[in-house]
Amino acid sequence: MNAPETPMLEARGISFSYAGPVVRDVSLSLSAGSITGIIGPNGSGKTTFVRILDGLLRPSTGEVLLWGDQPLAGMKRKEIARHIAMVPQNGGIWHYQSVFQFAMQGRSPHLSLLGFESSRDEEIARSALEMTQLTHLQEMRASNISGGERQRLLLARAFAQQAEILLLDEFTANLDINYQVELMRLVHRITRERGLATLVISHEINLLAAFCDRISLMAEGRIFCQGPAQEIITRENLNDLFGLDFSVRSLAGGALEVLPVIHKEVSL
Amino acid sequence: MNRLSRKRILSITLTLLALWCVAVLLSVNIGSVSIPLGTSLILLKDHLLGRPGTGTPAETILFAVRLPRVLLGSLVGAALASAGTAFQSLLRNPLADPYVLGVSTGASMGTILYSMAASAGIGVLGGGIAYGRPLAAFVGAVLTVLAVYAIGGGDGRTGEGSQRLLLAGIVLASFLSSINVFLLTSTNQADLRGIFYWLIGDLSRPADASMYAVAGVVLVGCATLFLFSHSLNLISMGEEDAMALGTEVRRVKISVYIVASLITGAVVSVSGPIAYIGLICPHMGRMMFGADNRILFPAVFLFGAIFTVLADTVARTVLSPAELPIGVITALCGAPLFIYLLRRRGVGI
Image (cartoon, rainbow over all chains, first blue to last red; front, side):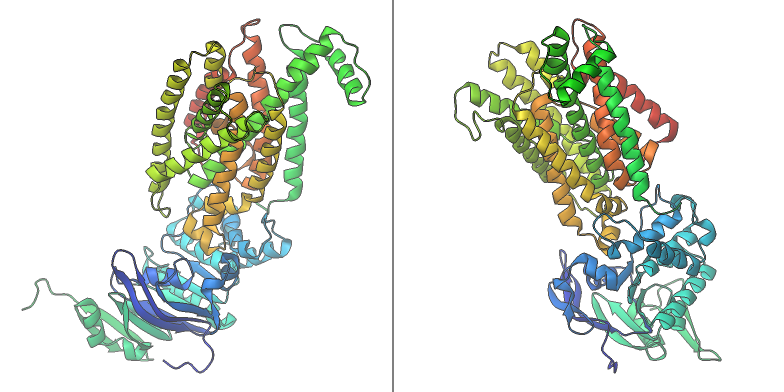
């Protein structure tokens, strides 16, 4: 709860409603060089919350602060996008652009009005493609690459933004386990190397348990517990969250193994 | 694929500018009276150098009739094609254009109401001065856009929103055009044929002082759209992504809507609602130059002008000495061309 340094991005008492309340009094802070995970059932308000963190939605109460004292509410979109990169759930519309051009979009917040890129922007986009191992595809149409490559491309675009805060909303959904691990390793490495403050929303409990420094459990718009992964990922907590039995084991080397225990019938 | 270079934009623009000059020269020479190319070049040179005219019939036809008409056609084509490009990008829908969205029809209605008020001697805003008609057309265009939004506006995050808007536009356009016909037939206008032509889209109306206002609006408007081209590139990728990448989506959308309606209103007030230019020119531009709006806006501006000048030349010569309204030609060659393009490679935004 009490990070010693100033948080990079901090949500204080955020609430938001559409027809009814979706996010209720949520506080969370992201600090440099660490990954925070949010786990919660569908409809628990995770995506709404992450959109509020990126300033795409305005909270009805509470505020989001950059570097502890800069309210997001008063900032221009372009300025926000220089500091916060987001990979939205179902992001990107895929048509005419090449993979390279798509990654180049990440440079947008750094460009002037007409958006002419410099050779430096080009370099940054290329290195983002290299980091995500897409260099060999850069001439292809973005609409013709595979699902796993698309997710990597969305990540490459976010890296090209060179923001210090990275928000990833279910960016490994629909990928096979191998891809998921590969992408999380990449995010983990870049987070450490560049001192990013990273937030990951995912349904993959094992993935988050392995890579996140801190985990928050969210249900019905509230974060009901948060802390280091080892303390938070427990049978009791997961049972509270999903209403299912879980088996949680500590493996050699400190890794956690989380499995839902599935019964055919509801036990009475 | 490298980054977009200013050089590429410049070379495409200059090439199209040269083609436009060729189209203009061709068009002013062709007609019920043909003027040899050499003669018109000499006349043009003398005119540009400020030498006194010779008063020959060729000179009168060239400067009083054909050149104004060709320039008007260029302006109209450039404006409609640019507005179409803007609407297609904004709505992420290849079928959007000022005509389909009802903006053109709304603008015609504004013009008709203004003319009726003026001929009834009612001193409306801008009455008597050149800006009255374009202003009325603009008001008509903007009110239509607002109505289309009120009827079909939905959640901008999904593609559904743009389809609803298009549907609302189509319905409103047919509704308004019925009212237009009703208004025109009920007022016992002497010049029914002229009005009928204008409703289909016609460039034969003699140019008057409002031309300067229209030209100003179109040039400034299209330059403004060009400034929004990168933001529109991002918006055509999805509004959520565009916002996350630093675009003030709401502000851009409202500005582009207003500017595109403004230039549509301005040209419709002089030419009537010409169909298909705003739909086809952007697609042909995309097929030739790619979908990047930074190239597309300047290219389509000139391409729209060329297309319209050529179509109008056909309109006034094919049944010579009788003239067809240009709207007939754009629809006649536009529709099959569009079907061909659609079948051949599909149309993307």
